[in-house]
Image (cartoon, rainbow, N blue to C red; front, top):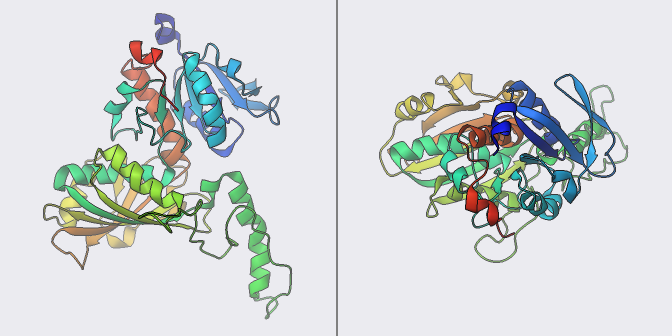
Length: 370
């Protein structure tokens, strides 16, 4: 990092600038007044040439090519795994530090997987790439980390209720486009009977999403102990262990897509080494940055209330009746486009520049092997 960069700001590229998360990255950079000297929005050839607005100025989107990363300090990448696989190493070769939002590098040896405020120190060991965790993992980590430090986690059971925005704009569009059709098929009150209209086409999800729950996110795993799990579920398992530095942690997960536009909700059962009460857990979580606790069970959070906001919301904290001395159940909600994607990425960039970890000397000479 040069002295001029420290003084005048940074050249920041957004890889996938015209996508749903990309637009949130740009918005949050502006909201948090990140020191951007120059913004380079990058996207596919199809959307290159379009305009995005940043700090009151229209900026032309450039085609994402290896040479587009010349002179860039930080890349915030959210253009899909195949794009990251191709272009992130090219950006690192040109001296960039990349914060990648895809699953491409999360479990790669030597690539820090970080939730801001949970395991910031891992960032200093980067070799040009920092991975942003899966959205359903990210919102769990501030809660799990605080409680693990206090009481020692032994086992975690998570059921996720994930909004369609986790599948991008296409997922949101499919919910909106099919809601009316499914409503008529099921028999709206104005008809009094089931309509014989054509069933909606589900292009994004494994089943129709409107008025439905879909017990599949990503592809199914075949073989081994994870046979029958989806990749989304295994992400929660393996990413939690890496972020918490707990390779021994017992974790299992079930991931469900729900007809909610924005905001992921998760039901978590936690077992601890030490005895713990709901009140003790609430006391700990109320002192945890970026976590908001509802002590009254009736004040449980919902995705609608969390949308557009930064904290992780926790409610319904109660004893696990099957393990009342050492177990708790709780309900965890957050805006997946912020804490699970764009906000965390920008916060990681803030940690980089605050600690002068942007360039790491010898680490810059040895990009992570991908």
